[in-house]
Amino acid sequence: MDKKIVIIGGGPAGVEAAKSAARHGARVTLVSNEEIGGRAIWHSLLPSKKWLKAARQGDKAFSRLLQRIDTAKKQWTTYNKKWLEEHRVEIVYGHARYMHARRIDVYAADNTKLDELCPDASIIASGSRPVFPEGLQPDGKRVIAPRFLSRLKHLPDSMIVIGGGVTGTESAYLFSAFGVKVTWLWDAYGLLPGFDADIRKFLAEGLKHPALDIKHPATAIHIERHPDNVRVQTREGAAYTADMAFVAVGRNGDVAQLGLNVLADEPTETVHLEVDGYGRTQFEGIYAAGDVVNRRKIANQAMAQAYIAGAHAAGAEPEPFDPQAIISAVYSEPPLAQVGMLSGPDIRTHITTYKAGLLPHIYQENGRIKLAVRSDGTLSGMAACGPQAPDIITPAAMMIRTKWPLKKMESFFAASPTHSELFFEALRNSGF
Image 1 (cartoon, helix red, strand yellow):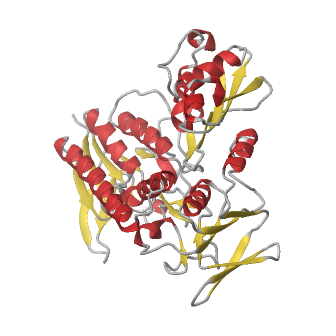
Image 2: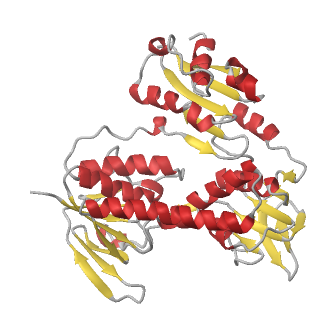
Image 3: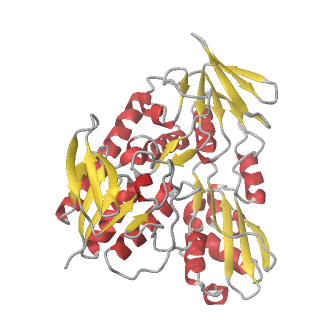
């Protein structure tokens, strides 16, 4: 008998979980409290990447860019809704709330009950919401966050970007590339904590721009809003003024409205979801994937977990999730990407430049690649900074996932001249 599975969340992870469960024979209902695509497609991930592409190409036709963003969002949503409908996935719009592990009620915004679902299993893929500390909340006017980008009618002359993480890095590059004078505030953690120090250093050099002024350490604690500008105060005692401020200081899993407290053995106000390699939580029959359980908010990680959870919930036996094979990427200019582990007692590293390949000589490109190799001849990790870095390290992620020995790939040569050559040249240069 087909399993009945409910997916909570209509973003990329929820859609991927629904696709996976449907492919494996389940009867799927997807519950979403907004249009399919969720916050990632409609407000953050997709719009930001269109902005970044325009910045790289020097396309400053503002109104045309906003139109292209709107078109791309609608195309993604139309394609995926059609796929779901063709595979008999029922889409229910509303807010999901657990009554118990095998019953989920769906409510409208005014709390009117719309549906009652009794699945064999459910998958929580409700994504995340941005965190705004007291004093740093956006107002959509002088103080904005990623979701406000598509609503801008024009860019300001100056902007303070708060946050040295992935979103802060991409946004600081984006605004400066469009000619906005940017003051970029990093807190004590600095630029891209969690990424390799050598590659971060190369990125920091590459991000230098006449319109980009980096302040570190500079921990924003309060934003004064004035009719013509904003003034950001820092914990270190300094203050900075600009036309607008952009806040990107983190995200938290969006589970507060799901009623998870009814699942706990003891009365509690908050429930922290824990998952195994298949996405199974501590509650029987309930899975979770993506931002609701991950410290790092990465779309490809969320979709990988969602695929595995959907397949397993449907009764299949997928390979468990491997966090070491997940690529983290930053789409600044130059872009940066990293996968696996780059340090440890049994790991040695080798750094090579993009000049090892032919294409960078043709295009006059610069970049760095760092490989980390274990003593048993397998790849532990890789980081790269330069053109097409997220694509270049994809073979590394596959080798980490499959545990292929480097020896098997030493005689492999990609098409030339391409960026794909660079991973294999770096591998041969590492002297594994």
